[in-house]
Image (cartoon, rainbow, N blue to C red):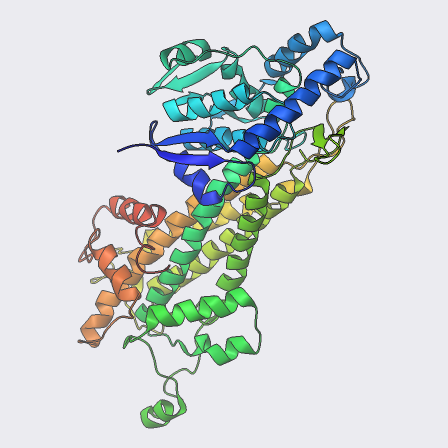
Length: 527
């Protein structure tokens, strides 16, 4: 099948594009700059060459970097200056980033440069894109970026391979950058003025991690709604609190949307409890509780607030994907052809860092809600003995689902540590010249660790909810699940059977975790 062509213009890249390329195989995509992008890149490049020829003092082009910004560089040394920044800034540590993150970084950086304010040659952008197409993936350590001046160390490791240094993953093996380029039929660059700085200065790692995190968080938030509804049915709960009239008098948009989604998931369910006045009178007033515990009753309010955080993160990241984030930036007045170069702070990751801290906190809350619903499913006293203790027959001989709650509690507790805001911390760098940093990469990595934990918590909740549904069928033969929850239950039972007695449980947890993380559970249930 021919490769899909993605056109880059520095203005229209979307999260879904980044995710698709990140998880694609070499050869699945080809990339081209639009004609307008090529024109802008060429004009900005001409401006840089003019600055050098004129001997103008411009930060990072004819001066040193950071605290060395007052050191003027001889024009004959401009190429060496750019090579030096790449080599000297490649100081990352820790395990290498996943290939998907590296591919996302390369695509985002190419799109940033295509915006036409950075002053690099098109050859730099083209080499980045050819590497993505052919599967030359720089080895980039995950730690070492403070998120201002952007992601210096990670981007320097990426840029090393462009100049034939460093290491790259090529067809499953780690080889030298020079060897990887040669095997892929590519030639290393000789960097020219501004190009080393353009490659290393900016928010690219943050944006890459954030794009993947947003996509993953949207899936987790959708699954949390599904799991909450299935648990409600297993616990003989009531959907009364999801009534549209309640949401309309406190009209937070995501709470309104969440409640509507819950009603759709539960449509037609006969597992739920009727708490209408007529039903209460016919059953005998006071026999049936008129309301449920908070983790069932308040799903629209809590999950809705979490959906808000996810939506905010998407908004922030999609701005960043099409932003010029290096420094200095070149601006050309189209009418007069006048050129101005401005030093600023577009590399600072604070907008992203705060969004990722907010995202991590919100996903932590989804995990907290799920763990508490799980506890109610497994604790007979908490569910008024609607379900047997630990969802097992012959309790005592069998421990049932006792221990899965321990795992969920451990993950929820870990998330509370990970939810500490990275953006609240800062340590000055570069001899106190760069005296405030965002820690955006830390915030993004923490948010993704929270996401992995919550995927597991939700998998355990789904395991318990399905087990609870089967116990409920014994006392409610012929009862029907909701339009959406019936599909979720069927997907679970394709992978995990009803647990008649104790057995080895972790393979079932992993099977459901994959069901959650892959997006397969959400697909076809929530759009």
